[in-house]
Amino acid sequence: MGLIVQKYGGTSVKDVKHIQNVAQRVANSRDRGNDVIVVLSAMAGVTDNLIKLAEEASESPDEREMDTLLATGEQTTIALLSIILNSMGYPAKSLLGFQAGITTNSSFSRARIVNINGQVIKDLLNDGNIVVIAGFQGWDDNRNITTLGRGGSDTSAVAIAASVNADACEIYTDVDGIYTADPNVCDKSRKLKKISYDEMLEMSSLGAKVLQIRSVEFAKKYNVPIHVRSSFNEEEGTMVVNEDADMEQLVVSGVTCNKNETRITLKKVPDQPGISAKIFTPISKAGIVVDMIIQNTRSGGDTDLTFTVQKTDFKKAVEISEKIAKEVNAAEVVTAENIAKVSVTGVGMKSHAGVAATMFTALANENINIRLISTSEIRISCMIEEKYSELAVRVLHSAFGLDKE
Ligand code: ASP
Ligand code: MG
Image (cartoon, protein in one colour):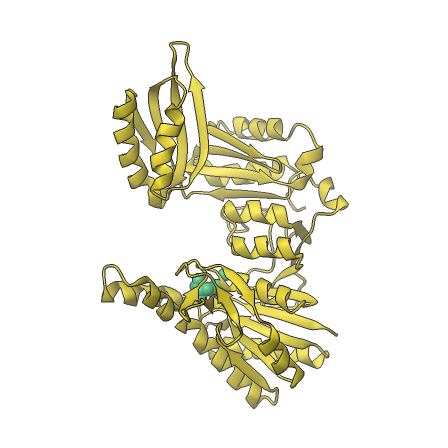
């Protein structure tokens, strides 16, 4: 018995039949004596369709109105679930973000939650209701509706769980947990029983799309354990929690692959102080996030400077690079779009030697050339040609002993 937050994603509420399945799960949890708060996404595909409508309506839709539009998807699902629960005899009340007291800053389309006044929610719970809250949305101090960025209902759920001090935060999705690798790529991948917040953060930013990154940051900050599980079966999923001692026994807990990056090299850049700043200042001013950077000094007194940016920023980054290349007298700009970043992540790396060597050897055995390398305390990433990315995931998965029997 306790207070439980359950979040259901788009594929779990994609039509009335699926919402009925969700209602049954919520009712079961209630029958076990729990107080239940449900956080919902829009039906699968609905947010994408709303974006298309706005693009049809205008080339550059007004930001405020865009959020007002996108927030409608979740209104449909919370009302339908509450209708179903009430007709099953379980009192339920739906709340939009603002009604639930969720205040955000004013950054439309990527707003951050600044406060949740949990009182409304608590009062409804005390009156015996199941409380059904629209994910992905809130409002700002000027009463504007805001949204939290794609996948933002995960963050809503974790923030609500933190604000009411819930005993559990369950995120229901269409996969049954976090895997050691994408099961579509590696059929020997295994479901992890638990994973640390830091590993999950690295893996989310590397392209494992199960949880919105911000929800994990929130969970870490407020120490909310997340249970990622499927809404289509009763199996236990994966717990995302604080690091503990037995997590370190596994050197690597996951292999991920991100095909969303591109590479830009400025050749023969003069080797002088201030050149890197000259190059990366305009890039950052353009709002472009740079991921990997590598600089090789040649004997002749100049350097090659290589960096990677997301595919969506590629064109802009190349334009800027070409302009700067001229200014600093670099020889040329060369680019590559068909690249992929494969990464191994694990808190065990902190206490085990030889992880990089194992990774490089496994790739070398398949004749896969490594173009760039970057590391963090618990991750090693290699940039390779995109066509080898799936092979790379599989060989690394077995090299680190992750294959299931
Ligand atoms: N409906 C929103 C989206 O599609 C939020 C979410 O599903 O988490 O991004
Ligand atoms: Mg999602």
